[in-house]
Image 1 (cartoon, rainbow over the protein chains, first blue to last red):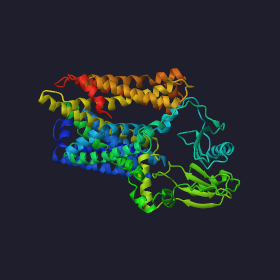
Image 2 (image 1 turned 45 degrees about the vertical axis):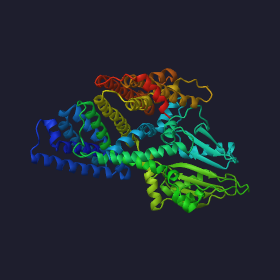
Image 3 (image 1 turned 30 degrees about the horizontal axis):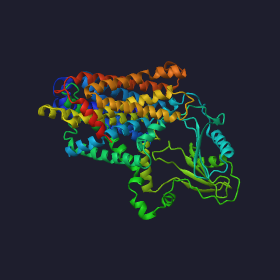
Image 4 (image 1 turned 180 degrees about the horizontal axis):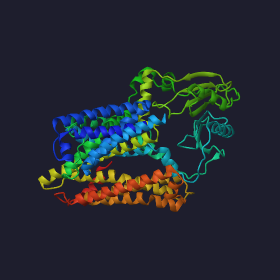
Amino acid sequence: MMPLAALFASYAAFSALCLGMDGHHREVFGRAPSPRRAQWLRGAGWLLLAASFALAVTGGPQGVVTWVGMLTASAVALVLLLSYRPRRVAPLGWLACGGAALALLGAALWH
Amino acid sequence: MAWLHNWAGLVAGWLLFAIFVTGTLAVFRPEITQWMRPDAVIAPVDQGRALDAAEQYLRGHAADAARWFIRLPTARDGALALYWAGRDGNWHDARLDPNTRQPVAQRDTLGGEFFYRFHFELQMPYPWGRWLASLAGMAMLVVLVSGIVTHRRFFKDFFTFRPKKAAQRAWLDAHNALGVLALPFHLVITYSGVITLMALTMPAALDARYGQDSAAFYAERGGEPPVLAPAGIARPLQPLGPLADAARRHWGDGDIGVVVVGAPGDANARVSVLQTDTAQLRIVGAMAVFDGTNGRLLQVMDAPRAAALTHDVVYGLHTARFADSGLRWLYFLCGIAGSLMIASGLVLWTVKRRQRDAKAGRVGVGTRVVEALNVAAIAGLPLAIAAFFWGNRLLPLAQPQRAQAEVLCFFGAWALAAVHAALRPARAAWPVQLWLGAALFALLPLVSALTTGHWLPGALLHGRWVEAGFELTALAAAAALGWAGYKFRRTAGRPAIAPRDTPRAGTRLLEDTP
């Protein structure tokens, strides 16, 4: 459950970081973000990335290696989505947030 | 730096593509082997019983050997692998079913071992293949670092991929995205790959300190099972089971990977019990060494010193034996990303060159040669891999030298692909070879079902996950190759100039290729 939460969190993190950039925000929403919105997205992105790492570390050294692989997998998935289905980027980002929370809840209940 | 990146990448690229693809397959070495040996199913057995079976077989068949090497069954490979060196130094081997204690009746094949070996030996005699692979790895490091320096908009273009733009833009985006997004993998796998062969390529420090006696270095470094020369005095060997149990207690009852017995039946017998290599990042786990004549524990090696530990962890990160199935798939996907990065770099070179040629009004011979080699190396390799798997299913089981015949299928198909690429213009050769590869992979589950009676839906229903995973991956490869062929065909109409000097360029290519 923890690795799954880390994977969702890293995907959500990259979604936020990506939408925090003017060009990509325009591709998805048709306009540049307000400075506050961009700042908020970037902040959330870095926070989620840190959270993802914290979740992965619970898996020990192998968890850290897995986390690096997850970063690549989630970033590649996001880039493909952004290129071919840009309008799905925001909903799937939120979905990943929800998925991370659910997986975390599942892990907590499991114990 | 761009110059260095372009030319070093071009020269090493074809070889690196093959190294990356076979290395990616080697992540699933036991699983590929299992698919390629469909004849016998081995029921899982506990390690104690397996060790008993090994001991009984070796005492019966190799009592006077210089060394026994016993690899116990794992979750990924149920067979018991035995190797022993005779007093004459020749190695022998047997694969046993630990339940029946008999050799497994299986078709003769190298299985996934072929890709693993090719990955760093390139089917060349020792040490030339290893040298070449190592040089390619060093070139890869140069190409990676120069690529990072060349890529000015590293963070700005982090998520950028515009497939609908002009060919050069789209290829460059793909190349950058594949490089940047999987960069941690590329750097670690390349650096660690070079490290795995460092004793061969950078022996100066060892030579200065130990001269020709490299065994002394490994003994001092620790981690190598000790093997003493026989004293010539016969002494019965202690039963291995209790020694293995004693060793296991030192690492909290974890699994055993390998048991090595030096000079069995001699006064100098040594029994080394090694922890499984799946339990920690480093390539070797703990080891306990016993005197084989009286069962006394001589030493336990668990905590290597800093330098050795660093080496072992870097090595372990490369082979990923510690990885669970999820992480293995991540390694596999990152390996594909690396292969595609190299392939896109090679294609990009010709796309740029085409534009320059279009301005000059004629297609250069160099462009043609690179294009043909690109087709042969990038589209021909999947074809060869598929042919290897077809050979495994279609060659008669009784054929002598069957495993070598399978390898011949691989190189035969690859050579034909190279000839085809040399004779046909690239824009025609790309889709043909990609589609042929797609067809071979797509039909693989069918060929397997017709020849072995195991079919994919049955594997899925009965939870034979390795078989199902292999064949689903083959279907995914078919889909990807088919899609790539379609893309190449659609964009092939665009080049400004059609190559008219094709046949002559083709014959030239054959002279130019070593």
